[in-house]
Image (cartoon, rainbow, N blue to C red; front, side):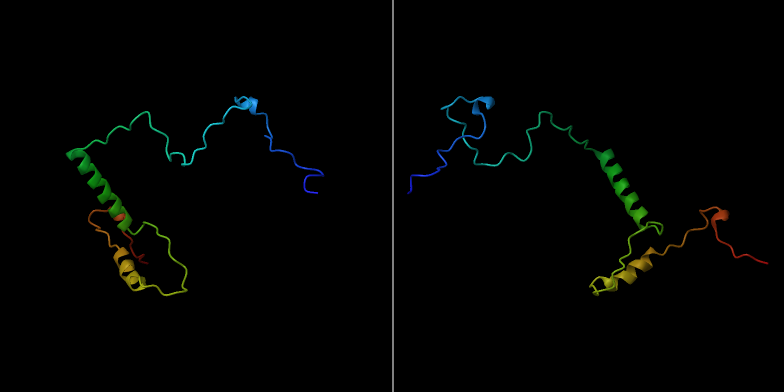
Length: 120
């Protein structure tokens, strides 16, 4: 009973192996057991960064400018609307909001920008 009936036959390729460049009976290439490299090798190396006193000064100036712009009152932040769980940082929230208040130096700004109360 074991050998009679419809058998599956011996294993065969489901595609034409000659189409991909191998002859019948020829050994197939070895299977790679390691993963491919994460990045391909670079043919051209990147240009090295300019180093010097002038570049350091420009970097420090840029960082200072970005920090001062974020401290300005017109810098919009996303307010967290979730009032579910009280967080540890909530007690520092009031201090942060107080530090965001800004009183301009009106001597440096034009008079047209200063808000005035209307008098009748």
